[in-house]
Image (cartoon, rainbow, N blue to C red):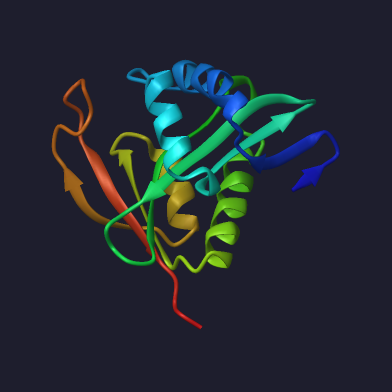
Length: 153
């Protein structure tokens, strides 16, 4: 997906250090670079980056689940200076269209119960709160498990 100087594409191996930098700047308890690499190698077709002027400014990484036709969004982030421009919405739309083409009908994710902006975004994409996970994060804060299911056509 291109929009002037904006590009969404599949993540590549050489993107791992830059994705780690975005992750590190975005979360209080970021995934390490090795874990990001492991996620990428396990499911490169489910990992995307968004770049502006050839600089990575955001990403979405997902993996497979034991439930047929379901994938798991493991991390999604946009650099703080690029937030508020609809980029999270763009990469999520791109991801959902991509997995639909691969035959996946369901997506799950976890989100901090205090992250109202993210929860609102996911609800706009028909994610529903399935349950609350107590003490999910390293600091003891809770998360919601959210699931989106698409009808088979």
